[in-house]
Amino acid sequence: MKIDRIVFALIATTTPALALASCGAAFCTVNSNWTTQSAASETGSMLDLRYEYIDQDQNYAGTSRVAFGQIARHHSERATRNRNLVVAWSHNFDSGFGLTVTAPLLDREHAHVHNHHGEQIDQYWNFRRLGDVRVLGRYQLLYADPLTSGGNAGLTFGLKLPTGRTGIRNDAAEPAERSLQPGSGTTDLLLGAYYNQALPAINANWFVQGQLQHAISPRRGYQPGDQLGLDAGWRFSINDRIGVLLQLNAQLKRRDSGSEAEPQDSGGRYLALSPGLAYALTDDTQLYGFVQLPVYRHVNGVQLGSRQALTLGLSSRF
Image (cartoon, helix red, strand yellow):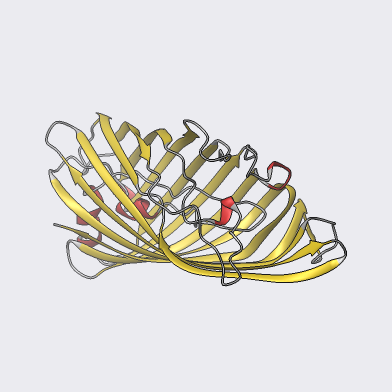
């Protein structure tokens, strides 16, 4: 089937890390490489272009939504609007090794009120910058014939590089919070594992994947908290071109640390349900889209969150 030919081009290798803090900087946690469904046993490359829209205009404390300024803070968060274009290039080698390089281009707006000695000062940032690039390798330990119901399994390993800027300022020369900046300034270790299985008898595939992200050392008074991402997904092919997608995305994040961090308002536990559709334009190119709906969140302190997030993408094998 046409929609199944592309699925063997690339394993689900990268899940953009959920970068939540009080300011609300974020990536969508949908695993867009799940649209390719299965591990690559063929040599070749793939290009994935993905657009994310996350409008974080809700304040949360713990599991509850709270009103703007309800809980006293040095600054009261209004909203953050994230528009991300994520470009991922992947190549699979004959040896069972593969490589994925992911570069996010960020378009971010943020507004909050700075509470200074009883005075309320509106502050605003708007920037478009390159974020932190990820280089992720993988090694496939277990192969299966895509026409059978066997499974594929492997390991992922790599680095998040400090390519994004950390000194963005607004028109009033006020620096943005470190968790809002395009980059964290740190080099992070990425380790993970995956398993996926084709079910040709019912035209379906499923996968599970986990990935840990750990900042190796602080940078200029800031170290983002460790993050663990867990994903599970299912894909059912309706016909040669159309596939129905469903994911469950979980993120666990520890508090940020350092003199430039906001540990009281960072980290938490998040769970989202992400239904979607994929459409094969050709044997080697497909469109996909997801709507990510929060199911559960428990944040430390007060943090911004969204009611939903949107992901649209295009994947092509060559």
